[in-house]
Amino acid sequence: MLTKRIIPCLDVRNKKVTKGVKFQGNIDLGDPIEMAVAYSDGGCDELVFYDITASAERRPIDIEMVREVGKVIHIPFAVGGGIETLDDMYRVLLAGAEKVSVNSLAVKNPAIIAEGSRQFGAQCIVLGMDPVRVGPGAGVAGVSGFERSGNPETDPRFPSGYEVTIRGFRERTGLDALEWAKRAEDLGVGEIVVNSVDADGTRDGFELNLTRMISTSVSIPTVASGGAGTPQHLVDVFSQGAADAAIIASMTHTGEYTIAQIKDELVKAGVPVRRTW
Amino acid sequence: MDVVAIIDYKAGNLTSVRLALEYIGVECEITDQPDRILAAERVIFPGVGAAGAAMKDLNELGLIATIKAVVAGGTPFLGICLGTQVIFEFSEEDGGTPCIGLVPGSVKKFTPSDPACKIPQMGWNTVEIARPHPLLDGITDSSEFYFVHSYYPAPSDESYVVGRTEYADARFASAIGKGNLFATQFHPERSGRVGLRLLENFSRWDGKC
Image 1 (cartoon, each protein chain N blue to C red):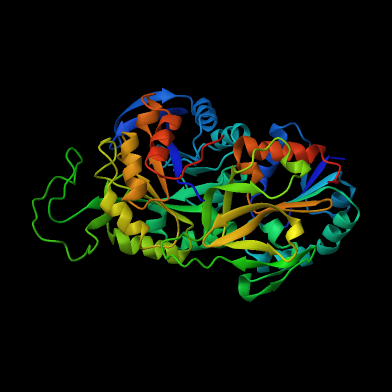
Image 2: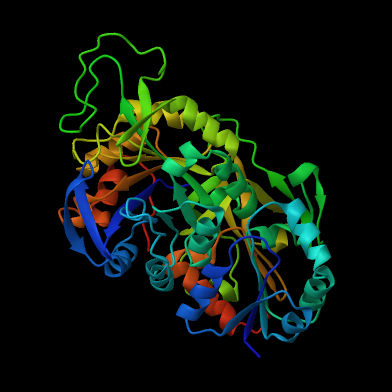
């Protein structure tokens, strides 16, 4: 039986893994290569690395780091951040990454997804998307531009109730999250990572409604992201959220939980996971 | 001469195969040169992508005859993913693609009855060992390997099936053995410790079983 994947996410800044809440107040957690090996040995199913300052600093992704990771771990890993061109994608894949993740770039230039998929294969093009809740009850405390609006009406522009944001939640796009997911599938992405702006960094659980809506509306694998705090949150997102994989960060970065502990809880709940590594 | 030749036919990224071999201390070379491939002690035929484009590129590079000669000559040969699919006689992909024909049978598309079943299969799934094989030495029955594919191998002769995996209503041949030829639908180079073990076994295999 195909198992549900657990994917630790390593946000990298200045060659250190860092973790912030809603892209603010980051603290350094460790060396990305050492953490990659520890996670791979500890039973994670895949890894994702984001070079979180590459875009802002207008520099290409840290290829040397990708190469070093590829030498020491032999499970799939994705890389994102600072991808601007097909050549950037090619360099990341050639350095040893299994997948390349595009987010803001895909919104600005959707054709590049189709071209990347055609040139390198759909399985290595991942769409990352950062949807935010809109309409009744929407609003994210502490994030500029996303204060609780108190608008009681559903916004007709966003029938799914979620709008896609880019540039680390800093910019709205006017795109409906569900429509964007379906369009990306048509353009040829192999997988979609749904990172909820509302849940990101809260450790209060995944956005189950959003995850389920997208996962059940596309035929490609859907990865839930944002909000993982306890093993129960993963049980919930694999059962109620219909996710094919889930991204975690703080809950294991800090040593509070191990991958093995999370998988034990998933097994107890009847969720299929990889047990031997 | 390098010990292992990894056949390069533009079908996706071969870096992960090279990195996995280097990690276990096996010399290798990524090459599209028939003479290099024919002279190698062992040959790996990897690849991701579509069967139609792969067969076209293999033809243009003149590699079909090379692959047939390698296998006929008894050189240990390992197919991976798309490399495994195109050694069958025929693939349903791209409107039907005649393939190399080293293993009798065809490659079929997953047709799940459950609309919630995602295609491609992407992730870790178990491989039930159907019969012992030197390449599975030290690998526990029902170990998990990493898969990414929308089509699956269906050998016409059950005796070639070494491992089986279930997905989308199919119980398919995920590992195939025929003399000095071994082929996997999964990616040993992305399958952690068990995958590296399979590659180590391959690096020592004399092609007999």
